[in-house]
Amino acid sequence: MNIWQRFKSSSRYIRLTQWEYWPAKLFYWPMYFYIPWLQLKSLNLVFFTATNPGLDTGGIGLESKYDTLQKLPQELCPKTILFKRGDNLKQLGQLLNDHQIHYPLIAKPDLGYRGFLVKKINSEKDLHQLLSKYQLDFIIQELVDEMEEFGVFYIRNPHEATGKVTSLTLKDFLHVTGDGQSTIQRLMEQKPRALLQLPVWKETQPELLKTIPSNGTRVPLGIIGNHSKGTHFINGEELIDQELVQTFDRISKRIEGFYYGRYDIKCPSLEDLKQGKNIIIIELNGTCSEPTHIYDANKMTYLGAVWEIIRYWQTIYKISVANRKQGIPFQSQREIGRRFLDLRQYFIAVERMENE
Image (cartoon, rainbow, N blue to C red; front, side, top):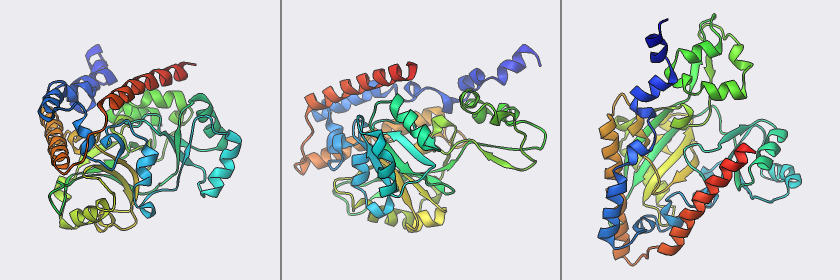
């Protein structure tokens, strides 16, 4: 293999030539101009807080994920507890037992996005190590495994009785398929999406990379349904039908003050999703939500993805204006500004924890 061939098979080449892996800034650069224009039109810097008045900050990403989960129909949510920074680790085992949450489980920061520090935890020891290293508020959740995962984007204008499902994303979790001869590492090197995740696996599970799966065996390499963790997002726009819309209209209207956002959902099948059967809402994101179908490079172009982001922010503004006309106030500009500064300090502190 010559130098050019080696470069073409490198993670650097993949990230450079395949736009779905480009940094978030390259998708959101127009917002540096467009959001100030919306702020000027609304005469308020935090107009987005009126889009979802039932969610703290409108769901812009400064809010507690746990508090948002508490606003959902609880029969549709996984078993979940909030373990706050400074809580007694010795009482954690009993707390998990009381809520019937067993290992393996999922732990994730109460404040975060894009799969930030989301971990599958296999033992009490691993959980204690995580919580000791990262002095943060953590959501601890039952592991909902062996189900399909979907991203469903729901929007409703306050003046309209019926909403819309504007985006449906199917998620193909990162995996490789054995050929009976190659190690898992070699299989990952041959699959661009997996190659990008290889450094993490070399650090966390080096022994597993040496194993040789039998021919045809599917080897899962992740359970986190996030694009940055290697999950393949598939645009399921053509699968949106009236049944799906009615199901999410029914669910969304049970959430007071919710008009715009994306559900991340586990359920056995697409048919169950459409009927609202056996579904578990892992997370609900508000105005910070991305319509994740934009990352399906088979059906979308880079410029198309950028335009979709602009178009969705147009909708955030329109719903905000409609709610404002009905007397719904904006949250305090000073308070939201302070919380953005706090968020910056939060991630600086996390970086420091990672390096300790």
